[in-house]
Length: 358
Length: 259
Image 1 (cartoon, each protein chain N blue to C red):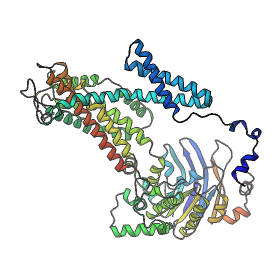
Image 2: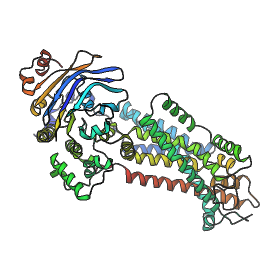
Image 3: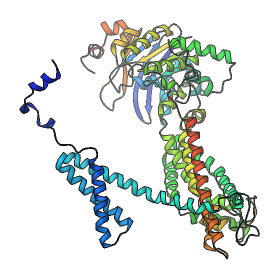
Image 4: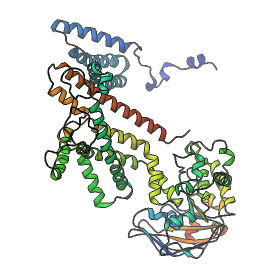
């Protein structure tokens, strides 16, 4: 029996209503509607006064309505709703991208002016106008953040292990609650905490990099705890049981099976925590202050850091202003690149350690 | 080399809840003992109490005695970790370590406990365990590949290889075939038949044909109702349990009249 004879046997009445053919918009239709919308809305706006923001947002609304109406007429309600929702989701996605793309382009555009060798090799010592660089601030940021990470990662990791593997009852619940609260504390509070702590012992005029590390650590620990906790929780219990059944003590099971299985997720959580604190300005302003020269000792005297350097160059520029503003933008750009590199490193680590199936 | 297990008046608790009551059972060395019974009757709980795995759940404890070749497993000063090294376990769902290769999975018991072994001794142990688990021919060319890349049945045999690589005296199996297809199930059953020459095997199963096929002795567990403790109804030679049990409940269960 050929296909043709099969078709011939089917009378129109035999086709059930569910399978009844409905119209379908051609593939170019959505694009045609989009172009038409942009032109029409643009034309209307040209009469009243054109602005690109208004043009795009009005077009989005009109496009959604027009597509729905056309599709409803040709394709029916279900497909029209599908198209409408697709448009809404896409618009929301584009909207979310706007600030991101605009921040990146503006920072790159403005930061490139001073993105030169001098910026990475010179400090601001003795510089009043042009020239100089952020070398001292880059080193300060790296040292202070590294110290904060060295303090926070073990504490956060072990706290998470306690909560998931050992914690029961009130104490564990209380810790979870306070960790949640702490993820939300304003960063200036962490700065003031650290300042007050050190001022108690060393007097109110004390400033040093380590104080900043402590403040950042207060902000970082809860983030590390939360992300590690989530990662440890998704390690299947069967793996723990498998290790126990082989006569493995609990601590070895945790270090060699649980942490090893979750390490990929834990590293990316830690990187996010570092990225969260590396750009903090307020707590460092209070605790570390700012210098013009290079200070590599975090336990004595003020240090420069990229966020504070950028803030200060912008808020209190010298005369002429331009070199200071340029240096501020470049500091922001360098900070962004550091975070980017950190994320790449974390992805690399995650890929190396991730459980494989092939 | 297989050892005997003797349970005397064993009560198993989760906190204050009595889960299994008054089990008296003696399991002979180098035999296969099947535990059957309806869901929730405590056969898995009993099995897990044999290598003290149930203690992983907080509050779980036992009363009565459980002996391995005359030595009390719950005696004072007995380390549960030591017990588990002598009594291995295979679980319902295959659970190879996802971060380890096939090779490392087999010697996970040694690796996780930081036992140093010379390379050729390790190689030999891996080959010997995989051969014993009837998996050697299928994986010998890809030992460095991840264990989770194998099929479900192969993974389960890998878990058996891992369990026998620590050279236990007893092998406990908690429904080892319930997640597997019939062909893999057959492979595991054949394997159980070979393994009983060296190990004492206790297997929990929901499949009565499987119990009849693989076991020498069968214990039937039952429960009066929800909230009541499970108990051992009777235990005998498998043939007797399936053809001529002494208890009415056993006969009803094996003939499929309830449960």
